[in-house]
Length: 460
Image 1 (spheres, rainbow, N blue to C red):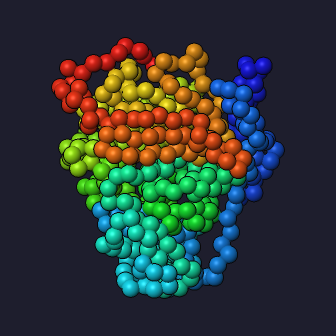
Image 2: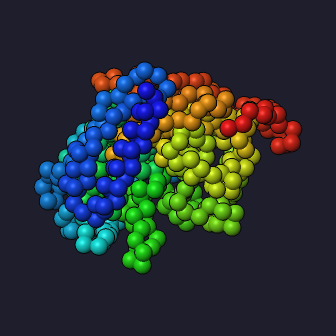
């Protein structure tokens, strides 16, 4: 039965791929038609858990006035500031944020900047970005954008541990996306990290607007820190050869604050944690700007101040799923040693639409001083799940499953954190996998010279 199922899935994926390619540049309705004509079965290969049919794409309409702010989201800037981003259809809208600690009372005001972009015949609304602060940690602030519209609120991260990150990749805007976001929001967290593939607009710019409206209820009340995936590229020969036009305009991250020259890679620190966001689709080779920046960035890490270091990128360096095999290999060969010698604790990736947790690894071998690698590309994308894993399973892969869900990393103190993966299951988010993790900064063995570190010989 299982080989037959795999053949059917492969045939389906091939048909869907051809359908999508033939409709590139055409209205959203035709892409939706592909999903209606070819509903996808969602099954977990690793156990008997049976998925419901794939969720349909959600198009979130603009139901506010022409002048009201929409697509509001917040992100961290430095140790005590927050960037508030939104879009207004009214080109005369003001880039101002009023905020305070009490609902309806705005004791502070900040003025920012605005811009817009053109993509072929599409013109974006006015994109506003306002940095507010300094802000007190662990505090709820109420705010209003542009001097009008609804009131929002966010909570700043705590000043010290514990802190809880939500990690979810390949989000998209389907019924499964909505389920994932509902489960994420059902429990408290401090910061959301997204390792690429946000809207799945794929050059259809109105889908960026729809995505912004879909995530606003969540991204407006907790900082969302993102890095790009392949679906953010949206390049076009001669006209838009560099790509990332919509992504860079809509989701600015604090790259300058970390010494980066590109919104596609940066780092930030929050509550004793140094977070590195890398770009899988911008040059990463030893003579590239990203490589030089990473060298400089890890040289600044103080493991007394930030005993935890985590990294995020899109295309996984380790992967036992048959989907996207080897796509992160050249980046791994170029950069893995930098993360290893920096004693990075965990590396999160997306791209593969499934969940997988590895042991600590360096150079394709288990290594007690290497990062734990986790693939978390299961947010709710429109392409379905990557159902087929390679067999027999590698001893380096500790848990793998093709289901939609999200992860939570609760860093408890300087030495220990708890990782859990929550599988979407109707109205509940089942905890399907979990593990306690010890920081490498707490390991005397891993502070020794590389040739003194022990590693086993189990290979991927």
